[in-house]
Image 1 (tube, rainbow, N blue to C red):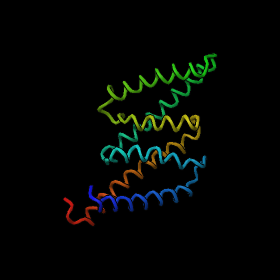
Image 2: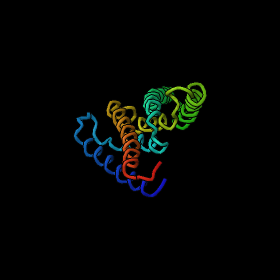
Image 3: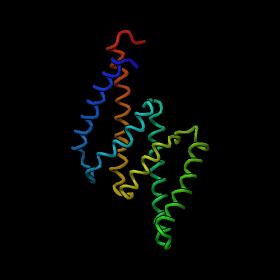
Length: 168
């Protein structure tokens, strides 16, 4: 990438992220203080190139991450209620379910929309942090981060094409 492209990208990303953060303040989410969740999904998607054709993969992988998070949380809760120590519970539950998630999504569903493991694990991490609470706000905010990533890439490419004349 040439420096002009990077300057255009930097300015455009700053504008889009700034507008998003401002507008987020006006959304009547039941849970507040979850804007940070945007910055889980945004760098996962944007860092992978934010290809528009892969947006459905990231969105569906986020939904899969929500489901897997509840599987993890339910299994952890069940083991702890059965009297298993927390460290042993974490070893068993997180270890076993992670193997299942990886095999399922890296091999079995690799050619489907459910194939972006970083998005799944980012979603799982957020729901671990919120203990599965505020699901509507969390999923809407994760989706917002994906949309911001898409807008950053599409907008930068459009602006670069319009402003950099020697770009192919």
